[in-house]
Image (tube, rainbow, N blue to C red; front, side):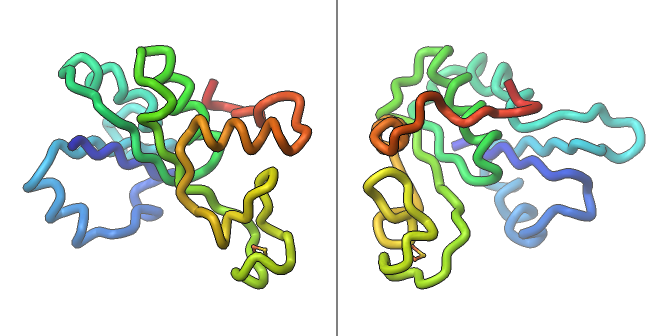
Length: 142
Ligand code: FES
């Protein structure tokens, strides 16, 4: 497993103790929109070359801003990873958290009840079933 962790800047990073532990267990690549002095800005997408070059990419498990997850999914698809091996953890503005209010719907699915984790091909089917003509834009990441 390889962990790609992106944050706007160092002060915005969370899970400090966990990251320190993970760093000892697996490859961990951190990126920043606004990096500390001496580092280049980037996103987790910028690390995909390294990860795919190392080979053996079986799956993508993603959480974070939806545009970044979608851009990551598209990039992994482009590199040959099947949609059935890509998982997204979605966030929605939830109110009832019990499938009653409809604030979190994704097509015929409720993220609070049926998610929040969706396989990418299921996500696309739900999105298309919702009447959306196109995938959401991924500004800044495509
Ligand atoms: S939060 Fe109300 S239906 Fe999901």
